[in-house]
Amino acid sequence: MPPTAFDVVVAGGGGVGSAAAFHLARRGAKVLALDRHAPPHDRGSSHGHSRIIRLAYYEHPDYVPLLRRAWELWAELETSSGEALYTATGLLQVGPPDGEVIRGVLTSAREHGLDVERLTPEEARRRFPGLSVPEGLAAVYERQAGALAVERCVAAHLKLSGAELRREEVRSWRPEGGGVRVDTDRGSYAAGALVLTPGPWAPGLLPELPLAVRRKGQFWFGPAPAELSAAGGCPAFLYELPGGVYYGIPAHGGAGLKAAEHTGGAAAQPDTDARAEDPAERRRVEGFLADCLPALPRTPERFAPCFYTLTPDQHFVLDRHPACPRVVYAAGLSGHGFKFTPVLGEALAELALDGKTRRPVAFLSAGRF
Image (cartoon, rainbow, N blue to C red; front, top):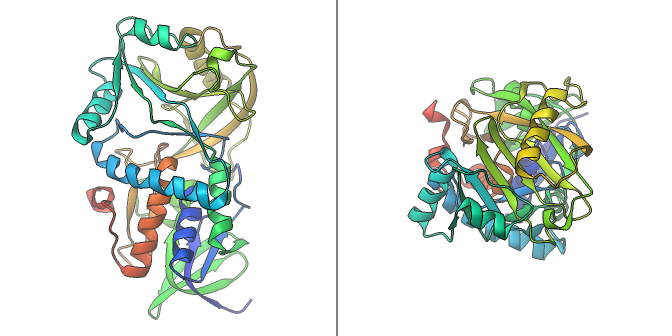
């Protein structure tokens, strides 16, 4: 296959890659999107029916301005695509009063003037009867939070981008002239710039970054009683407990209640990892449900693996490649990045086309490593 010229090649068509392709094409760039599978697919990190979106970010208050922009972009995408991408559920977060989650939520709320309500365990149980809050823990409720339809979001970004999408594995890249040469298992492409958004395949394309890939199990349980459905008023939830951090999304959109462990996970590779569930992981999730969602049937009706690409500090990396200024990337989203994908895609598009971005992403630079 002879070399083909594009303004920008996007390597990886998942959450961030699809958003980058969309924002690049909106700027008038000729875009080629490459993915070893056919997105939206279930082999990486951007699948599993739903993802929580929230604003009072316990991980760090610096994420909040990015989240505000992400909310705007999700609303625009929903309008432009005509797809229902967001379900309002609210979010209940539970943990020790001085723990990472509660302390972080309240810090973000205070610094950015966010609407977060504190609840005692009794108040939380009374308002959300399907959820049990152990004594001694604190609870905070964020009304604005909800769930994103992950596969629909990826598909909407790709469809509206109009980008050429090819199912090819990116093997390598190198600077060439004033741009970049990208080699795949099927051909070679010349481009003015390259956007790397490889998800759990990042260690192979960005070996200089300190990344670790772990497999996580996503479980769906049902039929869920009314008090554990979005229609019945159940919020999304996240619990910081002595045995780990667990989260869930109420039954909605034809799927049962989703629950998973945010902590833990075994080292894995997305191309070689077995797709079967881990019995020990399932037991931990079922144990959490027995304690905190006692009315829920605890035999999963569905399971799907998902991959976290973790940085040492579990914050994202978004930067320009030190070996080539025409290569920009986002990696290491560490299991909490999907909600940010439209604003990360926007920032990558600006970096690739303008050499700078308006978005406050300096705190995500690889220089911190």
